[in-house]
Picture 1 (cartoon, helix red, strand yellow):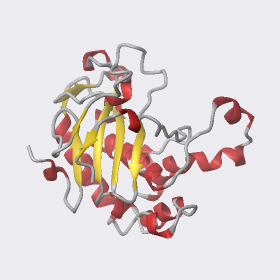
Picture 2 (picture 1 turned 90 degrees about the vertical axis):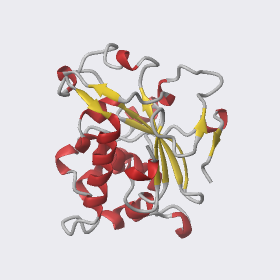
Picture 3 (picture 1 turned 180 degrees about the vertical axis):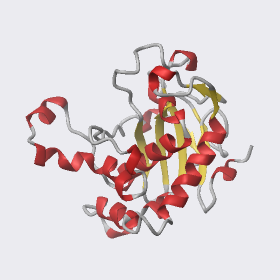
Picture 4 (picture 1 turned 180 degrees about the horizontal axis):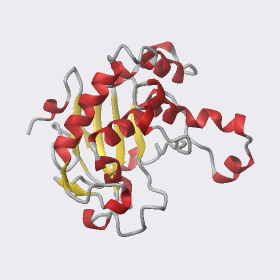
Length: 234
């Protein structure tokens, strides 16, 4: 199916393993089992212990509906500060590479699955009470207009959950900082930690208040792109 179907504006979305939008890629050569670079199956089943329905979810449909929710939310008059919030996240950058959420939705977005090499094992490692990585920005380029994002199948338990995760990760692309090393993090006071919740706080500004979790902080892992072979990003 053509990847452009999943975007209603100028961008392209690639769901790695299903709709690759003219892109070819492989896993990092030194670690093909890295959970951040896994392909998506056509369906995921999120157990009820992980707040899922326990029923198979069509991945393409979930991404389609999630992206539609994000597009609607950024254009909703009830969320007038959404784009300006994203611009503010990039305040430490040159003006030419600061981005609104509207602009980021025009990027070429590539979504890997963050999970086990065998999708059936994604929910066998731990139970629903343990921490789950919802998503990670693996690489982004605000000049070329692309981003590579790894998202857990757990986030795809519903379109609104997936949409909220996409907004959070795009906030990182816009400039929301990622959490420092554990030792530094534990030594910080509440005020010093506040900027690292900027990506999650984007949900409150952009129409996903019910999905906002005040305990979720941001992390960015950008060190693996040089180990991947990726074409079609320009």
